[in-house]
Amino acid sequence: MQRDDYLETAVRDVLTADEAAVDRRIGHAALLLATAGASGAADRLATQWHAVTGRPASVLADDAVRARAWAMLFEARGDRPQWADALVPLDLDAEEQAHQALLARRASDLDGLFEGSPVAGAVSALAPQRPDPVREALAAADLDAWAALVENHPEPDVAMLAATRRLAARLVTGADPLGLGTEWPDQCAGALIAALRERHPTGPASLPDLVAAILRLRGQHAPAPARPADLAAAEQRLGFRLPADYREFLSITDGLPADVVFPRLLPARELRADGTVVIVSEPATILLARTGDSWQTVEVDLTYGSTAHASFRALLEHHHRLLEASA
Image (cartoon, rainbow, N blue to C red; front, side, top):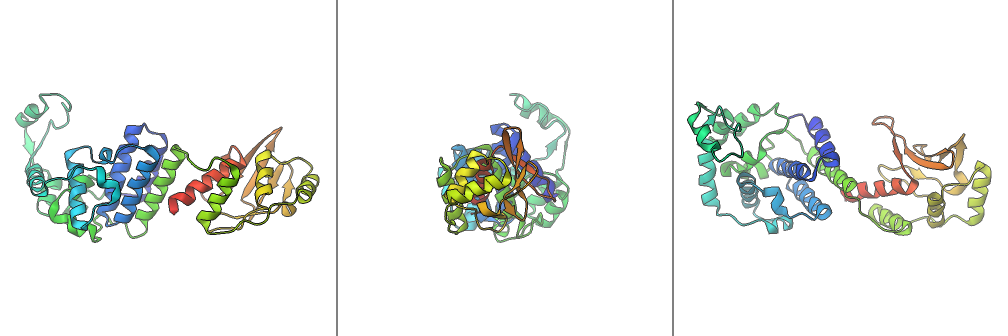
């Protein structure tokens, strides 16, 4: 599995797909992280998905194999996270037997062709059947063989893997059969949580509350508000009136200190203009761009490409969502 391709596709799905597809994507990603031994990242993703969508956790375990997979992982972990309280407890001995029978079932050439039809099972049973090496590897609890077979699959069936009781203990202790590494699971969870919050925007209602929330998440204190004289002098120096939401921001806090991923926002006395563009950060990666009577806030990133926000407040809301996702 190509980690970067997987994450790019997953983020795009969360931002643009319908709700059912988003649920499937988050369900697969959470199980993927859990099978890599990153139970904390998996729990955080599932918890934040529930928080922003309001949908029940049962959606993440809406078929027998996925429900079984989570149950086996919780048993191996020795605990059941809070987000999973809504999942129906299972008889794990019975589930283990059912799963072994599923793994032993030979694949039909017509599997999936009549999916949803009442005759699907009968048709598949009459068709020529063949061994399934992926299922055979799981039945033999051969984790290395399974990993080799799905190495190039864009979305490996981690539910079938995690539902294999003999492997669950190895998975939760960090066997990491797909080689996701120690850092990528947290990066994946953070990116998907940020995408969920982009899709379902929430946050403080007022600009003062938004600034306070950002500072609280950063663990910083706000500078004093800009003095009216400093704001007037800045606008006289620049030659035009600043956008209303940015003026309100300066009246709350005269700039902001930098954090790990966000530049220092300048106080009013340090603002400078280049034509119709006002540079409001150091380094100069946050710009206010004027076209006629309208403004946009541009976030410059030479590596990943620049982003235009509809307003300065929209930039702060985006930053707030990223801080929440990484908290």
